[in-house]
Amino acid sequence: MFAAEHVSLRLGKRLVLSDVTLTLARGELVVILGPNGAGKSTLLKTLTGDLIPDAGRVTFDGEPLSGISPRELACARAVLSQSMSLNFPFTVLEVVRLGLEAARGGTQLLSRALNAVGLSGFEGRLYQELSGGEQQRVQLARILCQAWAGKPDGSAFLLLDEPVSNLDIRHQLQTLEAVRRHVEGGGGALMILHDINLAALYADRLVMMAEGRILREGAARDILDRAAILDVYGVDMPVAIAKESGRPFALLNRPG
Amino acid sequence: MPMEGDRSARAKLALILFALLLVVTSLVSVMTGPVPLTVATVLDAIFAPETAEQRDLAIVWSVRLPRTVLAILVGGALAFSGALMQGLFRNPLADPGLIGVSAGATFAAIAAIVLGEALLGAAAIIYVLPIGAFLGGLIATITLYLIATRRGRTSVATMLLGGIAIAALMMAASGILIFMSNDQQLRELTFWSLGSLGGASWQKIIAVLPFIALGLALAGGFAGGFNALALGEAEARYLGIPVQLLKRIAIVAVALLTGTAVAVSGSIGFIGIVVPHLLRLAIGPDHRYLLPASVLFGAVLLTCADMVSRTIVAPAELPIGIVTALLGAPFFLWILLRNRNLVDL
Image 1 (cartoon, each protein chain N blue to C red):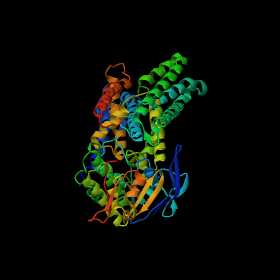
Image 2 (image 1 turned 120 degrees about the horizontal axis):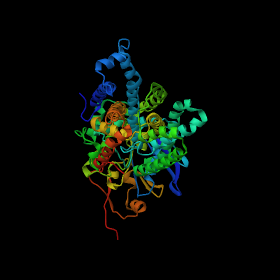
Image 3 (image 1 turned 120 degrees about the vertical axis):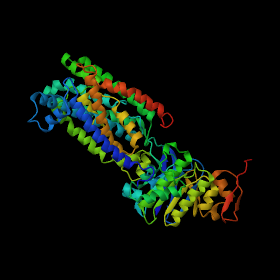
Image 4 (image 1 turned 45 degrees about the horizontal axis):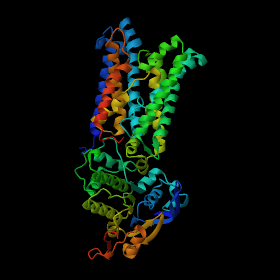
C-alpha cells in the first residue's frame, strides 16, 4: 500500500501541496481530478519518489520510500509520465522490452502487453514514426510489462499521469479497461485524468484536488455532484446518474 | 524464431562480421606501405618470427604493427566514447570531438607537454600525457553536462552551443601555451591540431592500454541502463536504473577514452559520430550491441583512414584528422538533414 501522510511541498516559493493525505491499496483504482496547477502531478511525483516532501512522509507497505532500492521499487510499481521524448530509432518491441529491465520476464509478456493496448502487429515499427496516441499506448504497454514482470502475482501498482491524453475515445476505454483488469487481478492503480465522466465510470474512489489540497474524496456516487465540480473547477455542470452504469455523469454547458 | 521487431539476432551476427572485418583490415594495414608485403610475409613475421627475414620483421614489428594496433585502440575508443556520450545526452548529435571534450583534453595535453617537461622532465611526459588529457576531458565533460542539464532534462541546443564555447575557450588557452612554447615543442604540438598516428610505438600502446581498457570495462557493464536512459532520467529511475551512478560512470568513461585517444593521436574528429550513427541504422540503438559494435567498427574505420593517410600523398603523410574530417563532416551534415524531423533540438 502507498501512503502519503500530511505531505506538504514547495516548488520555489509556491506551496504546491499543503497537508495532503492519500492512500492507495491493492485492488483499488483511484483517480485524481482537478484543474491545471492543482498539484496532481506533484502529488504523484511524491509517490514515485521523484520529489521529496518538505513535511509529512511517503511510505510503501509501511516503509519510507527512501529505504527501498530503485530496483525493488521498480518491481513494486510502474510509472507512466505525461510526456516523453525518444531520440533513438527503437522499435515498438524494443521500447516495451525496457519494461523488463528490473525483473526479467518471458517474451509472452511483451505480446500480452501489446495486445492489451491494441498494438499487436506493431512490434517491428519504429517508435519515432508512430502517432502521438500510438506512442502513448506503447509506453502504457511498457509499464504493464514492468508491473507484470515485477510482481508475477499481479500485485504491482500502476501510477499513471494522464494516460489517455492523446487517445481517441475507443482507445481511452481500452486503456482504462486494461488498468481495470490489472486492479481486479489484485494490483492497485492511481491515475490523473481530466475527463470527469471517464473518471466516474472507472474509479473506485475519486480524489478531487484544487490549489494543493484535497477538497473531496470518495466513491463517485457519493461525492461527484454539481457543487463539487463548481468548487473544484469553477465550472457549473449539471450531474445525473447514468442508467446503464449507475454512475454519475456531468454535462458541459456554455458558461454564462 | 526471434520476435518481430527484435534485432538482437541481427546485431549478434553483425558483431561477428565486424570482428572478422577487423582482422582482415588489420592484416591489409600491415601489408600496406612504401614496401608492400604479402599476406604470407606478414603472417610469418607475426606467428613464425624465427623463419622470417630481418627486414620484414623490422617493418612489421617496429613500424606497421604498433601503428595498426594504435589505430585499433584509438578508433575503438573514439567510437565507443561517441556512442556513450550520445547515450548520456540522449541524443545522436553529441560527440566528444564536436562539443569541446577533445578540446579540453587537447589543452591539458599541450599543458602537459609545455609545462610538464619543465616540471617533470621529458621522460615522464609519455605517462603524464594520458592522465593530463583525461583530466582535461573530464572537466570539460562535467562542465558541459552541468550547463546543458536542468532537472534531468538535457537541452541539445544548450549542449551544442555550450560545447562550442568550451571548445573556443580551450583553443584560446591552448593558443597561449603554444605562444609560450619553444621550437621543438611547437613541432610536437602541430601534431595535436591535425591528429596523427605517426608516433606509434609499443611504449605508447602500453601507456594507453590500461586507460582504454578501464573506460571500456566501466561503461560496458552498464550498457542496458543506457537503453532505459534513452526514455529520460525519470523514466530510467522508474525502471530501477541507478541513474546518478550511470551518469557518473558515463562521464568518467568518456573522459578516459577521449582523453587517452587525444593524448596519443591528437584530435581525430567525427569517428565518434559517424560510427554509432551507421550502426544504429544497421543493428538498431540497443546499447548492449551498439557499444561493442562501435569499438569494432570504429577500429576498422580508423585503420582504413590511417591507410589512406599513409598512402595518398606518399612518401609524405596526410594527417589522419584531415582524412576523417573530409569524410566525416559531410556525413555529419547528412545526419542533420536526415534527422530534421526526428531529433528534438
